[in-house]
Length: 590
Image 1 (cartoon, rainbow, N blue to C red):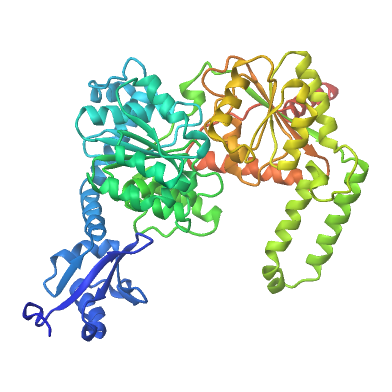
Image 2 (tube, rainbow, N blue to C red):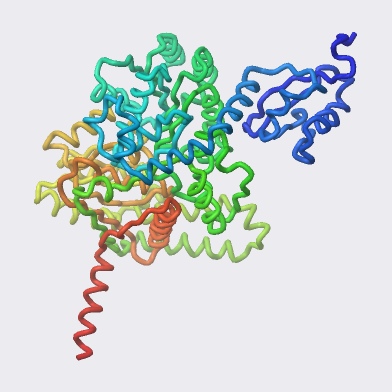
C-alpha cells in the first residue's frame, strides 16, 4: 500500500547518467510509470529536453537543480546525484567571476599574480609565468584551470606549488594525479625535488591488492595511470568521497580525455565530482581537432564554458566556435617556450627524401595498385562497409616505407631508410653526438637497435613494460657516454620525458596520431637544452609518407591557431633554400 505522505505525489529515485549530461528519474511505484514524465515536465518545464528513455525520465543538467525545489515529486537521491547538482550550482554561482579573475591575471601579468600568492613557498623557485599559473589555479572563487603551457615550460612544478599553496591555506588535503604510464614515476621524484619530506607520496601500481593497500594508507600525493583510474574507479571514488571536496584532481597530458565516448574520460569525469578543484595539464591539448578541447574544459568547469553551445562536427566549422568559447569563457592559461624561455636554443627541421629500395618499391607499387583497383570497384555504400579494411591496407603502405619484412617475411634487402640512417648515424657518432631515433613500428625498432648495438642502442616502446627498466634507459641515455642511441616509439616515450642530452632527433617513421608527433618534438627541445636542436625527417620519396607528414604539420598549425599562438615557423632546409634561390633570381634579372 502506498505511504500516505505520497498521496497526490509521485515518488522516484534520482541517479546520474553515465555521460554526466543529466539525471535519470525512475518511478518507485509501477503505478506511477505513465505519470512520471508528465509530472516532471509539469514541474520543470524544459519542453522536449525532458524525455523518457530506457533508463528512466531524463532531466538535463541545466534543469537538474530545479528538482530540489519541486513539491510535486518525492525523490530519493543517490549521493552521486546530489553531488552532481551541488557541484553545478556552486560552480554556476562563481563561474563568471572566476573567468574574469583569470582574464585579469593574464592581462596584468606576473606582478599582479605575485601579489595574490605572497604566501606561496614557491616564489623564489618559480618563473614569472609559473607564478601567474599558480595564482590562477588558486583564486579564491576557483574550482580548476586548464594549464596549456607548451611542453617544457614547467607545468609539473606549477601543479606542485599550486597544491602546496592550497594545502597551506587548508583548502585541500590530498592530490590525485592521473598521468600516462611513462610519466607516473616522474611525479614522486619531482615532489621530492621541490617539496622534499613534506608530503607522503605513493604510486598506485602493482596488483589489485597492492593498489588497495596504497589507497588504504591515504597518502597526501597519489599518482596513477589512466588504466588504473578505470579499473580502480570504485576504490578511488570511495577514497575521494571520504572527504568530499578536499582532493585536488590533476590530469597530466589531458588530450587522453578528449572524447566522452572513452571509458577513461567518463571514469575521470565521475571521480572529478568528488574533488574540490581539477586541473588539466597539456602542451598539445587539441592535436587532432578543435573538438578535442571540449571535454578538457568540461572536466574543469562541469561543462559551463560550452553549455548550450552546438559545436559543429566539421573541423573547419568547429574551429571558430571553439575558439570563441575559450576566449570568452575558458578557464585556462597558455604560455609558449619562445615567450617564457627566450634563451632556449633554436630548432630546425630537415626533410630527407629517400628513394625506395628496388624490392621495397615493387612491394609498395603492387600493394598500392591493388588498393586503388579495389577502391575503384566499390560504390560509396560498400566503401563505408569496407573502410576499416582499406584503412589497414593504407597503413600497410606506410609500414612498407619503414621495413617491409613486417608485411612480407620473404623480404631480404636492406630497407631504404636503414641505409639512409647509416649515413646519419655515422656522421653523428663521429661527432660524438647522441641521437634520438623515433619509429612507430615494433619490427623497425628491433632492427634499428640490433643494427646499432655497437653504439649502445637502447629501445623505449611497448616491448619494455617494466617501469624501472624504462627509467634506467632514460637515465643511461641522459648520463652515460656509452648509450649513444635511443630508439623510441612516440606512443610510449612521446609524453613528458626529458631526453635533451641529444640535440638530434631522427624520425624513421611517423605515428598516425598527431599528438604523438607533437609531444615527441619536445623531448629534446626543453628547459636545460644548451645547443641548437635539429630534427631530421626521413620520408620515402613519391609515397604516401609525404602526405602523412604534411597532414601532421597542418594539424600542428591548426592547433596553434586555435589557442591563439603567435609562432615564428622554425627554419627548414626547403624554405631556406627557396629564399636563397629567390634572391639569386633577383640578381639574374639585372
